[in-house]
Length: 247
Image (cartoon, rainbow, N blue to C red; front, side, top):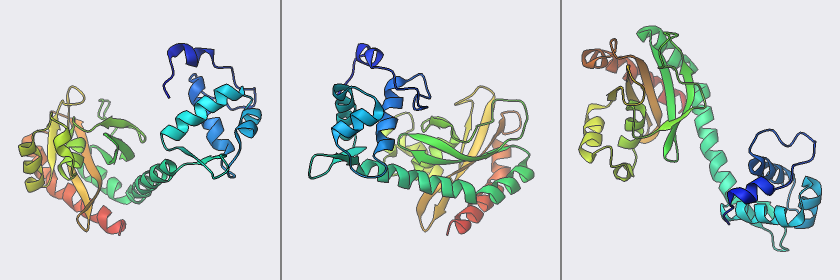
C-alpha cells in the first residue's frame, strides 16, 4: 500500500511514551507496531489500543509492513513478525560478527600503511561499513561505522561487485573491468566518491565465498598507482588473516 505525503502528515501523533524518537512519524509508528509483536501474534484491536493509533491507521501500517514481508498473518488473522526480519537479521549478524573479528587485522593494516582502513559488506545495492580505523589525516577519507555507500563508486564497491553474481546489473562498471579486478585480486579508485581521495581494496574470501571488502583510503597524492601496487600484498595478507579469523 502506498501513502501520499498528506497521509503521512495527517497521521496522529504517538502518545508521549518515548516511542516517537525521530521526525519521521510514520517510521516511528511502524517500529512501535513491530516492537509490540515481539512477544507473539497480536490482534489488530490490541495493536491499535497498545500503540495509541486509530484502528484504520494501525491497519494501514500493518498491511504495508506485511506487503514488505516484515509482518505476516497467523491462522486466526492475528499479525506476527514476518520472515523478512529473519533475512535482515542474518545479514546484519554476519556483518556485525565480521566487523568485530576484524579489529586486529584492521589495526595492523592501519599501522603498516598509516592510512584510514575500512571493512565493507554488501547491503542490498549498497555497501555498509562495519569496521574502520581512522588515520586522522583531516581529509574526507574517513568513513564512520554504519555508513552506507554506493557499490558502483570506489574500490570497495568494485570489489564487492567483482566477486558477486549480479555485477552486470551496474552498467557503470563494465564486465571487463570487473573481470580484470578478479584477475588482479584488488581494485583501486581515485576521486570516484570524494575529490582528492583514493583507495585500494581487496576481497575477504573464505572457501571461495565473499565475506567483505577490506579498503585502505587516503589522499590521492599518497595512493597513486605505484603506491597501490606496493600496498597490495599487505592488504592481501590482512584479508587472509581476517578470513582465517572468520573461519
